[in-house]
Image (cartoon, rainbow, N blue to C red; front, top):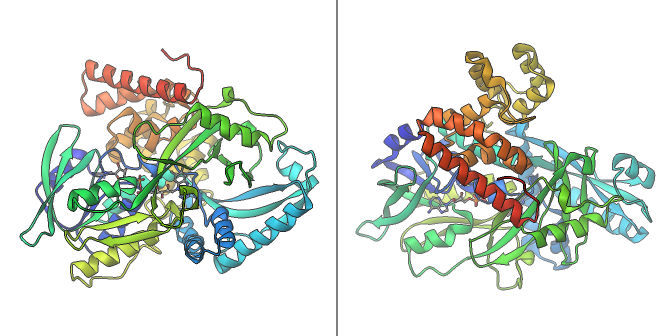
Length: 549
Ligand SMILES: Cc1cc2nc3c(=O)[nH]c(=O)nc-3n(C[C@H](O)[C@H](O)[C@H](O)COP(=O)(O)OP(=O)(O)OC[C@H]3O[C@@H](n4cnc5c(N)ncnc54)[C@H](O)[C@@H]3O)c2cc1C
């Protein structure tokens, strides 16, 4: 990718066919789709790429068994269609970036014979709706087999478990990889650049976005024939910026996860907790060497202070511990995350748990702003296709058809499941390092290793058992990271897996940033101080003890 300075030069005052606002899953999907259809496209992200909901998901490429339950219980055809679309979209999502995705088996423990019948019918229906897009047929396994595959499960009254398959992915890296694919297709993109106002032409159509670049605090215009609002939970704000009288369309729902060490679920399978006190399902999923537990669904009215809190930790632990032989305590939590779901309003649904995860493309008849709202990660590609179809219609450009269905993301070409072995052979890497590089960058891991060839010190980890220093450098040089959090949260994933490791890695990353971006010692210290305070705050809010000073 270009450096930020190069990107600003290519964007400042320039004209595009399409300007996509938002650098999450939806915006990145739209930007790639648009550029691949031959539309000259720019993407603007107010914070960091993937810093919103798109790095705070349960990391499932799924139809959603809960939505199946809703569809059946409430005879909701809309819910059924969302489920069907998501089941279908799993396939291209897994296929187009195999290094960032995998299929995961989920165990649904059954403690009564009735459970077996209920879950068996439900999951067979899930398989049937998926049809030829099914990832594996669901089956029942005996009590003995359940305990062999998941020894941590509570054995009292256990009859066995239903097993079904869904997809899993690295959400933040998938988002960054989408953006890199867009940039390689010729698109322009910039993070830490917020759309703060619009200018309109004589007919009232949006003509120019005023962009505030947050690092140098510059403001510049960007012209486009069409503006796509893909700002997820912030979509109503952009709609109001374009047409002040717009009625709100979104309801916001907060969801949290806690991260536990791998030993909590030592096998390869994930656990589905099918009933919570508030009528949800919860997951405990092995994920890149940790166990991710979530999520919650709480309607919120403000964007402030959306963090994992001690009462939410208590809620997650209470439900998880009902299913485990040895209870987990809050002291074992190593990390956590929270995000805001952008859900479309519905007159029928009283609370956000009942809202369907459908999406909608809205064309504002006054300003011509195209807003793509709602949806889920798994359907990002279909959402983008619908949004860019609307763009093409709006600007009267037939152009080419959507090409994202089979478009491989960067790192996929030349990648195979044993690619890590060639990394091991060529660069003499230990197996864990070779595997984690292959899982993050696919066949582009060799670009990271070229940095090590230039300076072997870069093969050192940023902290104990963490990614390589070369990866931090790569994040800054090739992926537009400009802060410790950009590097450790969205590019390297360290912050997601362990707050303590993130604190340990921060000074090393700060040194690399200072060297690359020409920071003074004072700037570096300030950035390090800010980061420490932030992580300590996250730990305190979650009720996790911190010895960090
Ligand atoms: C807890 C939780 C768990 C989930 N689990 C799953 C799951 O397992 N599977 C699944 O398929 N889906 C899941 N989802 C849903 C999925 O994560 C979201 O639907 C998806 O990430 C939304 O992407 P987005 O791009 O629309 O929004 P976001 O990722 O929030 O991106 C919007 C971006 O717009 C930017 N922005 C805002 N204002 C401006 C501006 N003025 N100028 C420029 N940029 C701006 C923001 O900074 C932000 O980065 C989950 C969601 C949550 C919250």
